[in-house]
Image (cartoon, rainbow, N blue to C red):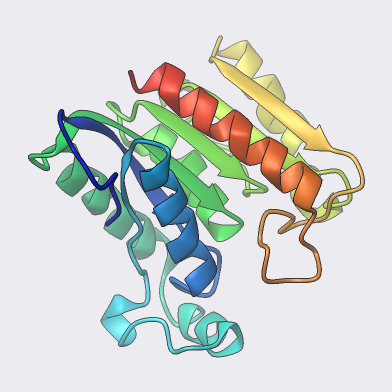
Amino acid sequence: MSRPIEVKEKLPGIIVVHENRGLNPHIEDVGRRSGLAGFISLAPDALTPLGGYPGTDDEGREMQRKRDRNKMLEDFIAAFEYLKVHPECSGKVGVVGFCFGGWISNMMAIKVADLAAAVPFYGGQPTEGIADINAPLLLHFGGLDKRVNAGWPAYETALNEHNKEYEAFIYDGANHGFHNDTTPRYDREDAELAWKRTINFFKDKLS
C-alpha cells in the first residue's frame, strides 16, 4: 500500500493490477507513483497463494499460469472492498491494470457496481455483461498491439450501444506493454502521456 507522506484527509483509492507475472518491482513502483499523485493505492500480488512473486518475471509468468484467472479476479475485487473501507480512504476507489491487469480492470467495471473508475492498459476486452458497467473507462492501447486491439472495435460498439462513458487512446508506434519501463517495449513519451492522462482521469472521477 502507498500513500502520500502526510495524510490530512481521507484519500481516494486506486487498485493497481499487475501484468501476467505477479507483483514485480515495476508494478510496485506504479503503486508508489499513485501515492505520490495524492491517492492511497493498493497493489495486490495474485501469486500470494503460491508464495508470491518469485523474483523474476519469467518465473512469475510460469507461476501465474497455475492460477485460474477468474479466481484472481475475485482476489482483486476483494482488494477493492478492503480499500474502500480503509480508514484513510474516502470510499471512492478506481482500478488501473496492465495486460492481464487490463483485463481485470475491464472485468471489475462489470462486476463491481460501485467501482468509481477503471483504466485498462492494453487489456483484453469482455464480450458479455457490458450493460452492467457503471464506472467511466479510460482505455489505453498500443498501436502495434494487434492481438489485443482486435477485440476493441466490438467492445467499443457495445459500450456505445449501452451509452457507457469512456475515452480511448491508441498510441501509434507503441507496442503491447509500452508502459513497462523495464522491458524493450517501453515507449517513454507515450508511457508518460498515458500516465498523465490516467492521473488526471482519476483526479476527476474519484473526487
